Amino acid sequence: MDILKYRKITYFISLAIIALGVIMFFTKGFNLGIDFTGGTIITLDLTEYKSIDELKTITDKFDENASIIHEGESKDKIIIKSNKDLSNDDINLLIDEFRSQYGIDNNNYQTEKFGPSMGNEIFRRAIISILVALIFMLIYISIRFQFNFGLAAIIALVHDTLIMVSLYLIFNFPVNSAFIAAILTILGYSINDTIIVFDRIREELSLDKKVKLDVLINNSIKKTLRRTIFTSLTTIMAVLSLYVFGVDAIRQLALPLMFGMIAGTYSTLFIASPILYNLELKK
Image (cartoon, rainbow, N blue to C red; front, side, top):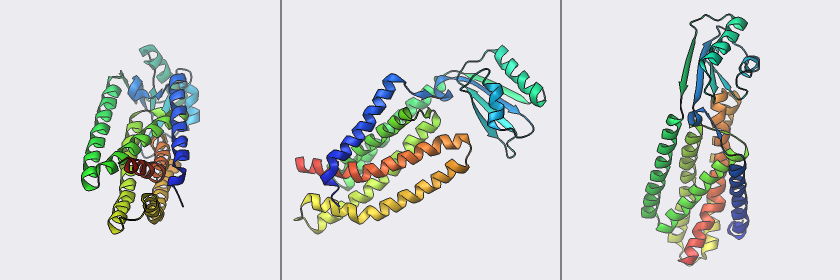
């Protein structure tokens, strides 16, 4: 197994996905959720469970893109989220539709309207958190290993972030607070995987300094491959169960997480280690 031999191919695959994401960004843009666009939230108590498809026949009259989430143990409450700044007349008409259809009480609802300022604040803090995390990771890995190890790990994390953003653009995932959570989760997951491989490379270097660098890195990847694959599979299976059995809000987080974990595992094997090899050759 010679992973370094095919590093140009793996680089090309990553660049192709990122390039497609860039094209989608300039042609369609992000599918911004209510956290970033602002909008209207309506909470209703229907007293009994109703399917999403049935409820959408009413909400589609006011906003076809509105999302509906069930709440409560018996799922008799619903939360309607619309990116539109619905007028008071539209809100009253919508509630009247539910009132006449399901006979809800006049006081069994709540409405809330807000602007995009909250989403902008979340986004700003998330960017700061990611930058701070990357800086401290670079310092830590440089001290524990070498600077080139830290630089290769950070480049791999930037790769994972760009891949995640590209996947959101390609598959039109809604960009909301779950997007921030998914990015931060994948960064932590990926760096843990990368450090395991780098730790093996460092041990191999200390044992035999005469062996060729490409052979040493390939052997290190081979020795940690089973652990990397098994860890990824078990984690993806757990997230998959959340996607299958979870509510819509959980699914919006679980699906990108699965893609991100695959990207993180891919970058550990095919991006971080080959980049380290290139950096070490230049040194």
